[in-house]
Image 1 (cartoon, one colour):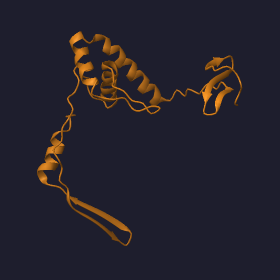
Image 2: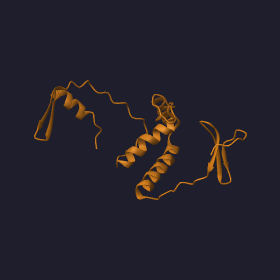
Image 3: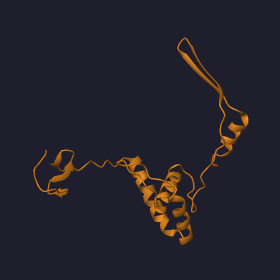
Image 4: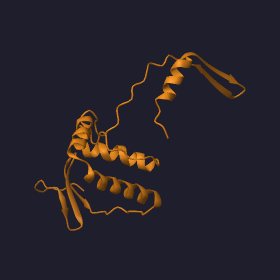
Length: 152
């Protein structure tokens, strides 16, 4: 509800105040639920384990993660994005690896480069509702793509 008051933001008791599009607003405080699903708990424990693992990095390893991280940007939130910190990049890479069942790494991974794929002869057919898509690629490009995937 729009209110006429001095500009304020934050929580006071069971009320939250903030600036809105048309002026100062005030609303009831709502505490969101926190379901303890197994998937969510797995992600949280993995992330916490990787945060603890970051404490064991040497100073040179931290510098390497930071040097690579400044070339990466965070996901845009509220229209803004910025370079990652070394810790953020370390957690992103190693938490993803751990969730996939892979070994974690102490050194930042290199950014893969792919040769230009030259797809040709795209053919789409519709035979009585059965749609078929055929795309021809050079054999060498397909072999190059598969050879760049990380080993399991």
